[in-house]
Image (cartoon, rainbow, N blue to C red; front, side):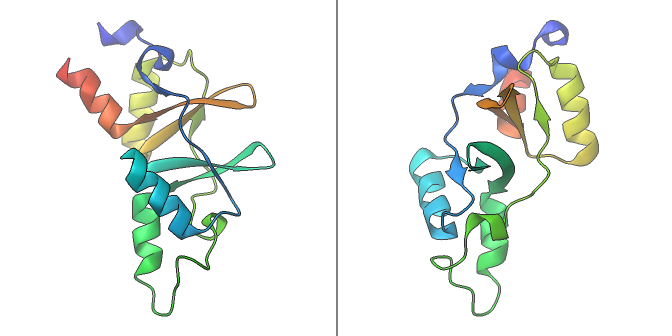
Amino acid sequence: MTESKTLRELMTPHPKTIGAEQTLATAKKVMHELGVRHLPVLHGGHIEGIVSSRDIALVERLPGVDPAELVVSEAMSTDPYVVAPDTPLTQVAREMAEHKYGAVVVMDGREVVGIFTTVDALRVLAG
């Protein structure tokens, strides 16, 4: 039953992160290589935001923009939804739906320990 499940059981553990000062081109390359659509963004070892493939695609469409020159901090969402690993799935799913979050950064203290995305949520529903 999913009611008692926590994100610790369902998250993708040890997600790849990217530095806020890295280029959008680098972020796009990492996402492509790993087959992911979200990267938690760190600066000085601290969570600063989250960048999605959609964020990058929107910026790339702007006239005169070179993804090799813009840094991740210029395209990321600066207020990611962050939860602890023991947060109940039902609470997270409710928040994701209400605020239309595509991903949740899972942190244990100051350390990024996982990510939970809409794809992960669909896997839970699919059983």
